[in-house]
Image (cartoon, rainbow, N blue to C red; front, side):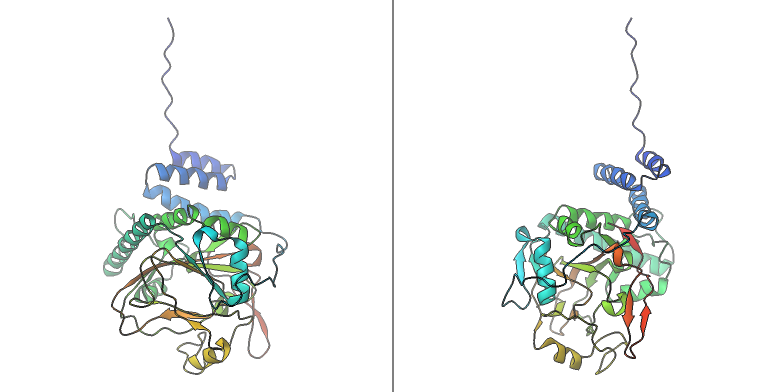
Length: 356
C-alpha cells in the first residue's frame, strides 16, 4: 500500500524570520516578512519589520569612503525656476541636476489615486490613535495604528509635532509599511536607490505623516542642514496627498541652489535655527515659488534647500502629505557644522537611521 504523507505546515513567518536573524541574515528576514505582510496584514509582522530595519542599520557595515558623486552637473532645466517633470520621466540624473542647479524638483503624478486614498485613510487612523494615546496615556490594546517607537522616547517632541500637524511614521509600523510599499511601486524607490551610489537609508525622526489644518499659523523658513549638518547627502521626498498650495497649505520654496547654511535667528526669525524674511529676500534673488500640487505630486529637495510651510488666512482646506528624508550612510555620523565664529563642531547623529 502506498504511504500517504501529510504535508508539513509552512513555518510561521515570524519564526522563519527569527531563524534568519539568528544566522545574521537581517535583509533576508526583512524581505521574508515584507512578502508575508503583503499576503496578509499582521501588526506583529509590521512591528518586527520596523525593529529589523533599525537593527539592520545598527549592525550593518558602513562604506569606508564616500562613493563619488559630482558636485557640479549640467543643467538639464535651463531657464526653469523650480523644474517640473512627470513621474514617467524621472531619473536620478534629473533629480541631481535639478537640485544642484535649481534647489528642488517637482514630479507630477508620483503616486496613483488608489494609493493616495489608502495613505490618507492611514493618516486619519494614525492621528486618531495618537490622540487617544495623548488623552489616556495608554496605547490601544490592539496597536495597529499607533505604537511609540521605542528608540524615540521623547513624548514632549511627539506632542509638539502633533500640534504642528504631524506624527512620525515609525510610530505607526503599519503606515510606515504602506509608505515604503507606495514608494517602491512608484518611480521613487528605484531613483532613491540609484541617487546616492550606495544603499539608501532613512531618518526615522524625519519621516512624518502630515495632516496640516487649513488655519495653521505662519511657518518659518529653514534649511534642514542647519541641524542635520552640511556634510550629509540627503534627499527629501515630500508627497502631497491632497490638492494644496492655493486653498490648502502647501510649500514655499526658494528656486535656486544654496551652497551654504544661511544666517539664522535674525530679522524676525521665530527660532535660532530658522531664517528671517529679510535673509530670504537677499539670498533668493526673488526666486520664491509657491507651487500648486495635486494629490500624488511630489517635491524633491535636499538639506540645503530653503523652504517653509505655505499658509494663508484665506485657505479653507486641510492638507495631507508625507515627508520622507533619505540619506547616504557613508555621510552620516561624520557631519560637521561651521558656526558664525568659524569654529567647526561635529553634529550629533541623533536622527535615528534605519535601512530602507
